[in-house]
Structure formats: C-alpha cells, structure tokens
Image 1 (tube, helix red, strand yellow):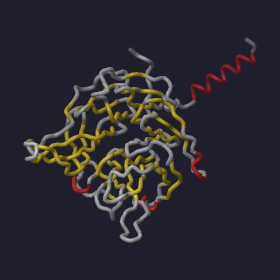
Image 2 (image 1 turned 180 degrees about the vertical axis):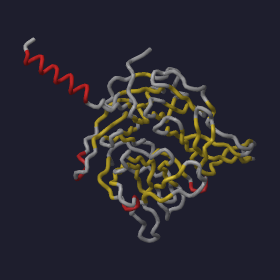
Image 3 (image 1 turned 30 degrees about the vertical axis):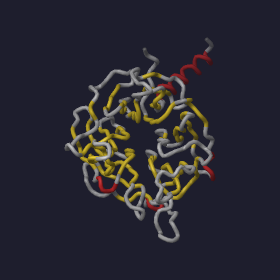
Image 4 (image 1 turned 45 degrees about the horizontal axis):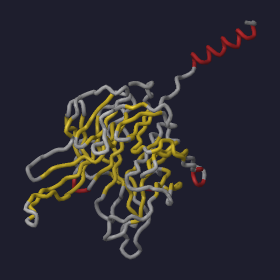
Length: 336
C-alpha cells in the first residue's frame, strides 16, 4: 500500500475510533399473534415469542431502552429479553379486589429504564341479571396502575373517577394519559406515579360545540416525543349520545406549547386511512418519525418536519403487523 493510501486508512480508523457510537433503535410489534422485533425501517425482523395464537394473541408490547420487553396475553403480563428469554414468570395482571369488583388490563407502557409498567385498567362491577339468572360484569371506570413487574410491587395508581387510560411515559415519574372524564375538561393530562389525585392539564382541543361550549372532539392515545417538542394524538368528532361513532379519524400532530395547554396543530394523518382509536402512535427515539398501525393493513411510518403539512409521506413498513412501540434498544441478530 502506498504512503498516501496508508495515511488515508489511518485517518479513517482514527475518525471511527473518536466518533460516538450510533444510537440504536428497535421496533417491537405483534404479528400473527406473536411478539416481534425489527429495525425502525421494518427490516431484520426477529421473532421473540412462539406461543401466540389467533384465539389468544399477545398484545400491547412495549420495549425499554435496555431491550426489556413486556406484553399482555389474556390477563397476564409477560416479560422478555430481546433474545426471547423470559425475565420473570407470567404474572396475572388483572386484579379481583372483591367478589363484586374486578379489573381488566387494556394496555401497558414500560418505562424507558425498563423497571416500571404503567397499565390502564377497566374496573367492572358484577351485578345479577335475572333475565338470564347469572352474574354479569358492568363497566364502572378506568384508572392507571404503576407496578415493578419484576417484584410485583405496587407503586401507586391514579384515581378512577377521571377515567385515565392509555398511559405513555414522559420521564421517570410521570405519564401522559387521556381522560374520559367530563366534556368540559382537558382530554390529555399528566399523571404522576404514586398519586391518586387529579392529573395536571396538558391539552384541551379548541373545537367546541357552539351551543354548549362542550368538547367537540375526542382525543385518545397521546404520545409525546422525548424532547417534548411535539405530540401525536388520535382525534375524532364527538357524537353524542352515540359514543361508538365510526366517522373518519385522524392522527393529529401538534407543536408543544409553553405551557402545553397552548400547543398548536402542525398537521394530520388521515382521514381516508383505516385509523381508529387504537392506532397506537409511537415516536422514534429522536422524535423525527411517527409510527402507527392501520386495521387490516399493517404498520406505517412517516418522517415529521415542522414545515407546512409536516412533509408527511406515510409508507407501510410491515404488512399485517400491529401495535408498534420503539426504544433506543438494539435489535439482536436472528435467533431460533
């Protein structure tokens, strides 16, 4: 090798040694009933579980920055390392406080440090139905519970009066949640771990019914970027008294204001897409790309800028997959 070539090679090696390591990123999702991992572009897919079925699938997977994965299956919480090894035995994640009260977990979100699971629970009360001569559950309320999944230590829960659900961590002690309480109140609030108090207002959609000044839109499943500069939330018209309204929904993206209650809309994904309340919007760790899933189609992503219209270019990255979640973890090589 010539001296010039040797010098160039030496400089390249020194540059690589001095450079900071590239930030990892991993995407966890469910496909064919099982939990999978992939790179953010959908490539390098790795199957984490093999016991999910159509009748009893995994759902609501969440991944921490250290690669820890949790997911629900039925009423049990399962935990895995990226290679598929279990961390602790599956734990029953539904609580039966009394013979007449029970809970059902809807979704989970694992803290970025991989220690605490925030779970939204539906609270049911059992009543006797004389028409069929049996006890039947009746929905009562929603609340968010915080637990150390390794020790099963309860770290507090939100008050069930405000119907808090769909938690997403914003730091080590707080989650952003959506609230189904009241039609005059903020739909997105911040709840603190361990406190059974009313959460702090984060955002209320400005659209109001002109006659009553009530909320004209429902906001659900809010997700904040790590730098807190943007957030995404499901948005659909509120049609009373029919709360099961199936009109088109959008994923609305906002620039976070100071205070957050002064946030402003940037752009929206949809209508015209198969988006519903459970599209699970999730940001890449750097906050530049948004991921979601569309019913019957799979997982999509798009870069999001602050230019008019956000320069959105949605594209499908994994066909037939659902419920994406991202972290700074590294995707392992294929195993099994």
